[in-house]
Image (cartoon, rainbow over all chains, first blue to last red; front, side, top):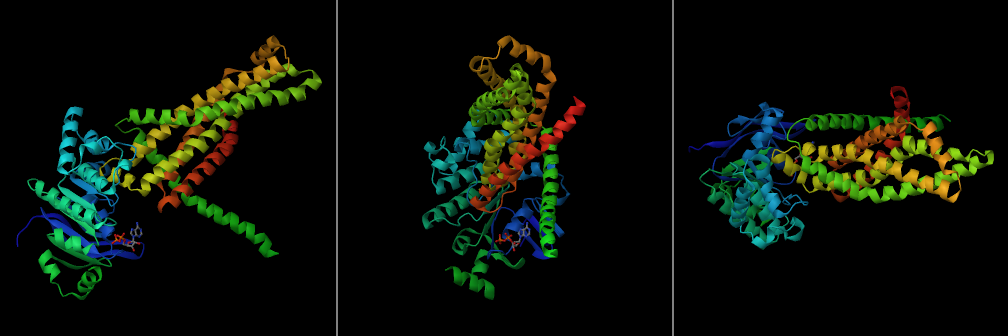
Length: 250
Length: 263
Ligand SMILES: Nc1ncnc2c1ncn2[C@@H]1O[C@H](COP(=O)(O)OP(=O)(O)O)[C@@H](O)[C@H]1O
């Protein structure tokens, strides 16, 4: 199978003191696909995410994002590089002192020379794309529901047309209907932006959502990669840990 | 017996050991704040917002404390001095004490209690709700965006508040001294101009700017290092107030000694 790698992990090892949190991870995340990194709590998923963002650097080994080894970038280059990412946080992490409009406009105001007029237009487009009602636009994040905050968070993450979308536990703690809505949003976002092409990485322990929306699944257990498979093969996997995980979650 | 001696020593030792790494991290934080201060972009809007916020939070309390402390101080000194018929010294004594000590220290205590606490609470809850992470992930420095405007605003607002304190406290002293207690008004002012110098007021303003710097550094630092939910935010807020106030009182002594040499 030939594909382009968007993120490469080459023998990545991460230790905090004597605690080995990531153990010799060696795999690639495919460009233009939705990959879910799945695992129990404490498996090292968030730590892996922080390596993609360049927040943590490997103890040994290498992480390359869009061909760039992040540990070789200096601080300001790394900050600049992060405009390639759009990140959706578990609880949206909207700036609570700003309106939803200002939240979505924030990255554009920080990193582009767009005029306020252009920004306004783009914010409205993003609101449409994430199926947000206009009435939410000038409200504060605290005045709208959790599901809507998720959409605003997604709109903000999309503001700079990122090449890589990162979702941290996007459906944890949501009701089933909102979960479905978020899933649909992730897939529609992914498909709508396929011209870029966009790579989506989801950190999750929600097996049902994973099976529904992912192209690839990487299963982590105690810092080790158990399998990294296309979703159909993952579903049929007879690996005992994965079987147990699927059983326990359904 | 050995135990009795050892216990306090152990406690002192462990406090020092606990404090040392914190002081190290605080110093590193101060260096970061300085580095981000001199790097573009200048976030003037955020800085003005913070100044307004600080004014809103503390101006009324400062006006209240300054008027009453000026009045009570004048009254106390009058009670002591009138026995020796030197009550016209109330003016300069209050003026000097207020400008050199009371204004910067009281303003510092009020700002530590109101603004230092608010900074820790705001930034702490932003850490807990991942808003600080969101800034960093977008490539915006949280220290520059959240820390620097608060520190700069406090350094500039504190002397303004201290100046207001000086003005109001002296007015209070003047009202009590000359209007209530009957000190001769001409003598009151003559004595002030005999003993009081502009340098003394400047000393107070410099002190208050330095207090402001430390209060904001401590408040924002406490906020940034919050861990673990709402409880962590409460703890940080508390620490910001305690350490802000202690720092003001302890630094006051050393600053007095240093400024006496420099000015
Ligand atoms: N900064 C850190 N310092 C020390 N240990 C850490 C740090 N970050 C994570 N860990 C440890 O790494 C392990 C994996 O954590 P994490 O990546 O958060 O797992 P997950 O996201 O899969 O639940 C945990 O045991 C955690 O205690």
